[in-house]
Length: 223
Image (cartoon, rainbow, N blue to C red):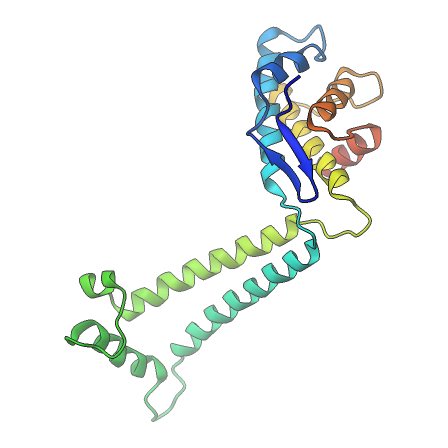
């Protein structure tokens, strides 16, 4: 059988999902009583699940460092949002507030012929208002902060869990989800069930060990 994935120190690399010949071989391990149309739907969903598992977690030499960098980015984005709020504060008394100062030189960059600081071409063309720029920037930063936090939560940092073990569980979780999407319930994962046999064979295709323990942990995590 043609390999669709290869493994190295950095984790899984390879093509998208499962190849056609891999689907056909795996179909032999789906329960005999399952209608042909449902088998095909499940295999298509499983292929998407494998691809999603492949892309959802990136394994570097130091996962903890990646998480730390994402956390730092999230904090910086949050700090920038707060800084923009600070510019708009109205408690500066008789002093001219920093937002007004910034607005003066922001407009200068847009409207004078040879500004000391050249703005982006699109700003010179469309002459945006400073308030609109800051509103959009805050919205973008808040979204990036949330995405960074979510990404950090998806990267496992347990020293006791090898990348191959983590990837096996990730694949199992995604394919269990594909089963639930296809059949409307969670699969039986007891030894000898067709789903357990299917996952064992899928593990061979992906060069992963997807056995009883991995399936049990994966099912518990999404039940």
